[in-house]
Image 1 (spheres, helix red, strand yellow):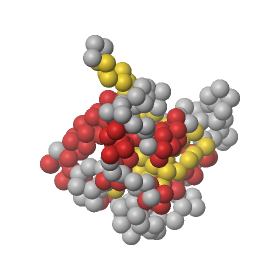
Image 2 (cartoon, rainbow, N blue to C red):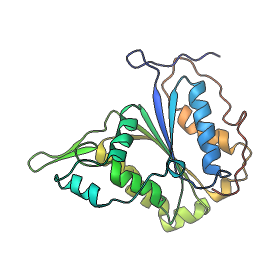
Image 3 (cartoon, rainbow, N blue to C red):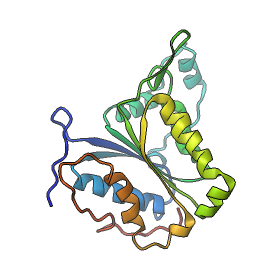
Image 4 (cartoon, rainbow, N blue to C red):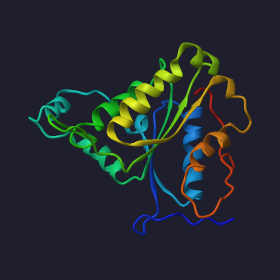
Length: 224
């Protein structure tokens, strides 16, 4: 079945896929490849922000604080990341869960990039103005514990409060899908296809295509 993407101003929809994992043979990178392939099959263009390979500095340092305080310019690397997001209709974060949350590299990317004046505005009288309401967000978290552990200790709910509500809702960006892949699911033969489907099923479409999430993608990970 053919698929005709819904165009925005005559331009194909565009996604920024952000991944944070240091190992090439990881489930994180296998999922990233499957997501990019599936989005292309659905008529989306994509850009990959591989934070490890690109050497992004996650430290909110003196230059960042000066920009926050209004006494210095925003660092060039931060502006670059903001422009990447500005070009995208969808932001897709794919990451391993470290200590029941985001890895430091990805958290630092958010700390530095999602700043006042771009992601939101603070006004003493009007409160917070959310500036990313046009952006659709998809989260794929890959955990090393089983689902029962996340539920028993409330980690799943804590991640929802911290990431979905505390970061993206604060900026007005809608989290369309949020998938937590737990250790008890890692042996599932259709894992890649099932994980990718959480995103592709949410895409606006004129037809309902069948896309295999693991057609030519090798599930060659040795960790999450």
